[in-house]
Image (cartoon, rainbow, N blue to C red; front, top):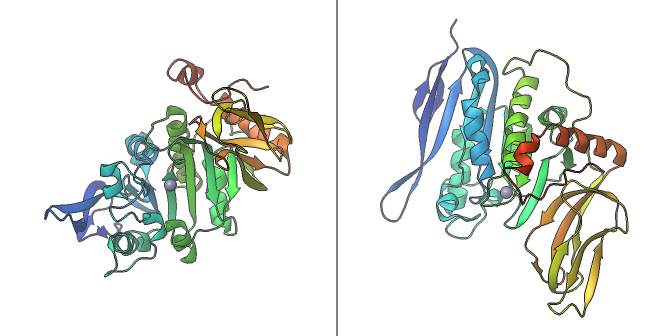
Amino acid sequence: MARAPFVIAGTEIKAGTRQTVEVPVAKLYTHTPLHIPVEVIHGRRDGPVMMVCGAIHGDEINGVEIVRRVLKNSTLRHLRGTLLAVPIVNIFGFVQRTRYLPDRRDLNRCFPGSESGSLGGRIAYLLRTQIMEKVTHIIDLHTGAIHRFNLPQIRAELKNPETVRMAEAFGAPVILNASLREGSLRAYADSQDIPVITFEGGEALRFDDVVITSGVKGVIRVMRALEMVPSKKGPKAPRKRSEIAAMSMWVRADIDGIMRPVAKLGQKVRKGQRLAMVADPFGETEVSVVTPISGIVICVNNLPLVNEGEAIYHVARFDELGEAEKAMDYFRSSLDPEMTEAVLPVHPWDNDPK
Ligand SMILES: [Zn+2]
């Protein structure tokens, strides 16, 4: 018997076909209607229904490109189950190049939302009723804030074994067991027992090829683990792709000043090691910023102008730092050196695995 069609926003997508559906959201006050475009790939055979979404924070654009490249991947021809790709959730913020909605709310704090609420609540409600209630798995794509560059990492609540399976399959070098923020898409999905992982990589308003490539590979790997697409033939992947962090902390500047970074993204640092220098413009007052924990640098602030108390480095601590290093080494070895050196000469990666 043929698989039943997938229905979204009144559109029926037959098994074995794909279609872009415009899900109506709201009208602009110019009377122009606004839609969230969703690409539905409805496989011929039954399987998981996975949503992959980007730009719920409108300026976090790496995810938009990750979705585009996933949709081009030829392995989707063999799809089992259904893929719902939502490249731009926060259409308003994306157009305005901002994280927020026009009323300055954060859409990722508006869940579960309501039909008659404010704009954010309505978009959350729409996403929930039109899409999230139909899915079995979610990958939510994010980047660091503006001027903050995240190492590719997965954040997830690691209580649900299916969530753990997705987090490990993704293969980002670091996994953070991140508590749920009230009102976030992830918290809502978790409350409905939908396994959900958040990918973080790069910074807002920038594309980064290393991050985008690891995001695309990660989404496909999760689909393989869920048997939505066929597994790769050939030698088995190495065991150590990711390591789960025990905790993470932001290291802050002790004085106002101009920062000179010393530690690089992905670098192993020891407790007490210098991460950066901060000095006034005359160099009269100069202070080292040191890390109070050993670990791996998972986010760097790349704006050198800092205020006292500003978070400038994010360091993850591991029970087995050596295992985290192995995961970082594998991650580096999986990158095309030309991609990191020739294409991105001023790239924040530490490619020197010392
Ligand atoms: Zn975000």
